Length: 379
Image (cartoon, rainbow, N blue to C red; front, side, top):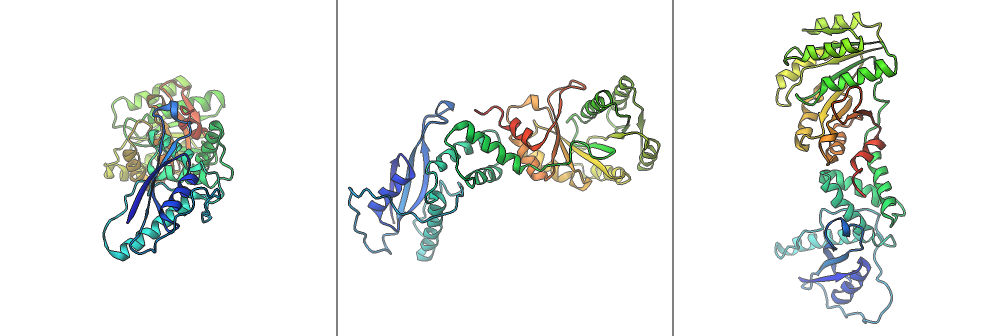
């Protein structure tokens, strides 16, 4: 196998040199941008380092094309897609003729994907730059690929950085599940791991509804485990003039629903359960099963590691939550975990919180709002 490396200004120049030196059967096995580091070089036009190979043991010799031939290379047309999973894979030197043939076929497919015959020849470079940005924001690799593939399939990728950012925002918003609004049922329950701010979040929503929307509310708590939890909710209830009920069993919860059914909305606080506490989550499920149709909010902290957020999403899935709330956005700069988690959970984000202030520091969000928050520090 004959392997050569080129440093060029764009992929068209690379293809011309590869075709001249290695012939039409050559394939590109890797490419990467070479540009200044840091944000200063973010939107500068990079050079490409391209590595190509040809299996010269099984192909006849190719007569080199004249160097002065000005005609552009004829590249097979391919769909406007973007994939990076092969970008740094080495070519194998062994494994037999069948293995080499299979590998060359895969690399030819990569070439067709990358060159997008007749499309914007700088698209791959622009998308690769955004790929690095998303990964820096701690968006997972598979979600990043979904975002970039959607952008690559958008006709007419702009060369203007702000226009590209708008395309990114639209693509991310399209990926995020949409809902019917932050609250769509009379009964709302707040579940989630310990320490994420469920009680404070409930109080913020209650205050906004009672003070600004003049809603008649009732507060119910199941959290008799955490020291001071009942007193905290009762204090909020006294300040806002709302009744607070403490229940100890599913039967008592059902009776509380009947007692407060004349209220506009009933907000239910629950005990925090670790994602590893299957018994506790099953116990909580017994309470939620006596409720009528409800909004079940899974409350998560944006400061939690992505793998632990994924774990919570799966651990709480038996409780049939249908909306997400992310807290503590003011305590982190990397909000990619919000996109990862919303895509994994498959349900809309209803609220985000940005501090401890009641009734402030909470915001109802739609997909476009969440996308702006995630990319807010970029560009």
